[in-house]
Length: 241
Image (cartoon, rainbow, N blue to C red):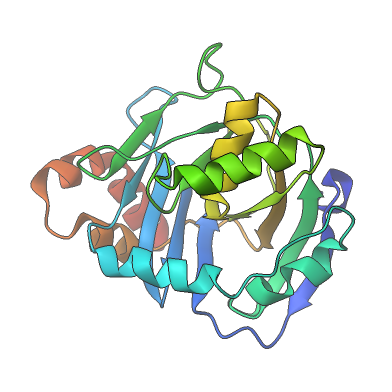
């Protein structure tokens, strides 16, 4: 399926695992420095709503910003595998698909004050396309950087933001991805009204969900978050046995 969606499939043999994504779409976890940063999944409420929870530990988000510093600037016609190599060296060993995803139809799901984001797929307004989950402040605060990307986009450049997902999308209208790099680029695309372009990296693995421990770690004893995530936790625990 990955090849049919335009991914080039490759095996990462020497990744150090400091950046990883586990589980399957609808029950996945983004890990940075071997600890979970974000867990996303269906709520299991009887509806089709999805949500994501981000750790409140700002040190993890700082680590992710450090990882971004290893990326190279893209040119429009760069081979996606060559472009992805700085990220691939950080991933856990395994098989991945890499593609340049142009003119993407997405919506962005920022986190609220309690570290959660909620959305409904297939809504005619606001949640059409792939859910992109920011890993840093959204909207980004550096207006000068955003303005620079706006100028470049309006002049015809198409800078690539970077997303990482737990598997290739079975349905672009109902799937989620983690925004690893390019918050300012994405804000600039939104300001221009032009659909964004991405370097899209998808893990190729079995359909096992992420671990219950990942969700426990991001909840970190918060009772309101525990209640919000109760159905997803039961799912993860049942599948983990």
